[in-house]
Length: 289
Image 1: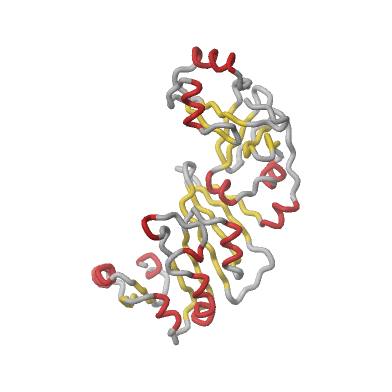
Image 2: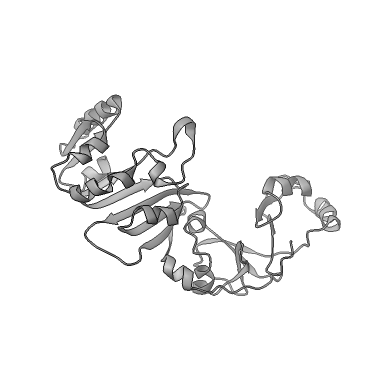
């Protein structure tokens, strides 16, 4: 709210919790934000009965349900923004919804049909937010999906449409020692431009369900982590025994594999750590390495 107050002429903040509403009012006065009006009430009722026209409405629905249950659809969140859309459309020109990263991207776009931009935001370690920009006055045929990753020194973005992803053909090939391997950032994986990454960056996919990519020459602007393939080891009892003797500590991951990372770690008899990584995965010829 205080960030918005630096830009907006006036702000009306609706807060259901009385203690939080009182704290917000006190902090607004303390910080000198005299353009903030705080109302202790239910935003559903406020929006339904509002006779004021706003430029922008911002809403951040609860991310978990009863007993901490994870929610995967916007309509299951509280308040239900999808049910409020007719009233919101009358009240404001633009709506911004800050939502849980657990929500399904396709379902969210379906539930918010006037979305122009959908931002999937995260760090190199995890996806943090899904933010939908709904413009009731500007109609677009296909919304832009933008995967944003905030790294230590920069911001990585990848923008595409679901239509482009559907019509794109990925290329597949088996891996060779010494090639570069690319693992998309979590926000990119959540947005799911899985074929268009191959097309746009000229990298080959390992398997239709293995979301790792390879190339002979390095692609420095790929939106993800970049590794060099040191060795390709068949997944067999003989090689597992040899692996145990060679590595005592190595970071373990799995992608489209027959076991989880924890299961593979126990199978290999190693501990996480060090500057190397072993990835259990399935290749395009359905072999496991």
